[in-house]
Length: 229
Length: 223
Image 1: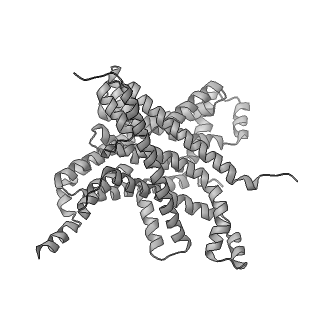
Image 2: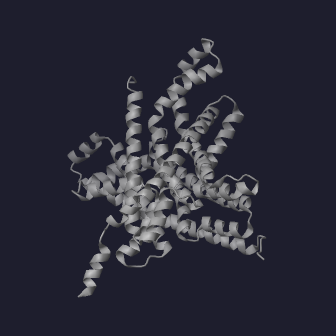
Image 3: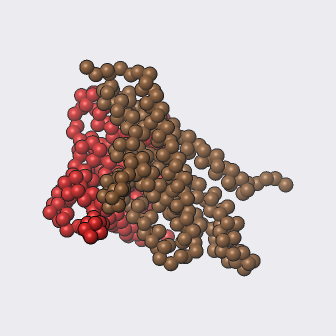
C-alpha cells in the first residue's frame, strides 16, 4: 500500500520548499542583470563602430569589420568564452570570471548589434546623406546628427531581439564559475534535490523576462517611429 | 608529472569529438524538422487546443536559455519520472525540442507568406486542404523558408556546443580536456573554433545551393 503513495509524492510539483532560496535567486538575477546591462553597453559601442566601418567607403575598414562579424557569429559562444577565460591569464591579463564574461558577451553581442545597425544605416535614403554633404557638414557631424539617429531609431526592434539573445546567452557564463541566475539555480538544485522544480521555475523566469524585454522594445520602436509612414 | 605535449592520439580524440557533434547536430535537425513541421500542420488544420499548446510550447522554448532546458531535462526529468537518462539522450531530447520550436516559427511564417488568394483559388478548384498544403503552399513556402532555415541551422550547430556542460564528449568537451592537459589554451581553442567555423561555412554553402535549386523555377529560362 505504501508504494503508490510514495510515487504520488515523487510526482508532486512542490514550489513551497524553494521559498527560502528566493533571496539567493534574486542575488543571482541581479548579477545576471548587471552583466547583461554592461554587455549591452559594450556591444552597442562596439556594434556602432563596426556598423560604421562596414558601411564605410574604405575597402580595408569594410573587410576588417566583415572578418570580425563573420568570426564571432560562426564560432560557438562557449568556445569564445573559454578562449578568453583560459587564454587571457596566459598573456598576463587577469580579469576574473565576471569581467571576462562581460567582455565575451560584449564581443559576441557587438557582432549581432552591428548587423542590426548596419541594416538601419543602409536603409537611409542616399539623398539625405548627399544633402548633408552638400550643406558642408563635417563627416563627424553627419555621423552624429544624421546617420546614427536615423539608423538607431529604425533598429530598435531588431536591437531588442539582439538583447533578448544576450540575456539568454548570459546563462552560459555559469560555465566559467560565475554564480549568476543559472549558476545560482544549479547550487539550489543540488541543495534541495528538486532539480525539476528549480529549472522549470528558472525557464519560466527567463521566458517572462525576455518576453517583457521584447514587448518593451516593440513599444519603444513604435513610439520612436510614430511619425514614420 | 603531466604530459603536456600534443600527441597523435589527440588527433583521434579531436575527430571523435567532431563526429559526436556532427552526429548529434544531424540527428536533432532531422527530429526537430519532423516535430516542428508536425506542429505547423496542427496549426494549418486549426486543431483546437493542440495548436495553441504547440504555439505556447514553441514560445517557451524559444525564449529560454538552452542551457536551462538542458539542465531541466538532464537533472530534472529523471527525478520526476524516476528513470535514468544518459547525457546523450538528454542532449537529443533537448536539442530536438529546441530546434522544433524554431522550425515551427519559420514554417508558420513561410506558410503565411503564400498569398490568401492562391489558397482561395485552389479551394474553389476543389483541392482538399491537404492538397492545397502539399501542391500549392509547400513548393513556395520551402523556397521562402530556406533563408531563415540557414541561419537557424548555423545557430543550432553552435548550440550543440552546450551539451559539453552535461558531460557529452563533443568537440567542445574535447577542447576542454586538451586544454586542461596541455595548458595551451590559445592553440586548443583556436583549433576548436576553426573546426566549428568550417562546419558553419559548410552548412551555409549547402543551404545556398539548395536555395538556388528551389528558386530555379522562377528564373527566366528564355523563349
